Image (tube, rainbow, N blue to C red; front, side, top):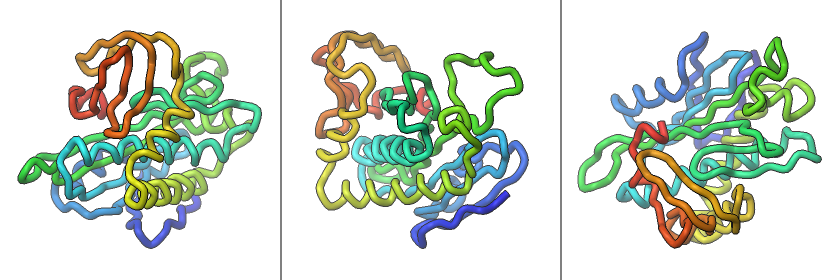
Length: 234
């Protein structure tokens, strides 16, 4: 399989077989935090990659990078899907194409000093190929199915890496407002009534979207990612 060519900000680690890229990135982050380490699982059936970050801010601020990563993954995958299929984001961690889940974002962090998480790992996984028996998973979409043809994984990894750098740079230059605005333009169910049940939190009401602090607003309630149980995002 062709290896991705990444911008200099990244250090690529390739793992083979069925090893989980997200779990491996977390293992590496616990032993040596290397900002920009990107772990990719070289397997033809699934897209799996994870990025290690070394945040220097409290957890609530650092977790805004999760929203940035979801946005970057959505933009990257949108470049490979059929133009007629609409792309949307489901809070907090899912990229949808034509209303069907295509990719899920994962997140984990450590316990650093002074309230900082010490390390942060952001990952994405998606099925790459159509199953042998189409229709068995109607609630899930594959990269091949969304594109209408096989998609070279190396190109997808490259685009996710580039889009993440672009959105991280914009966050640093302009603050979080442009991130929230772009998220809300793609947000599934924006302006409609919905119920959210995730990580021990249940909320219902009109979906308002992300605010300037990275909190998800629904029915007048603001939910921060840091409030969710960590296993809900892993």
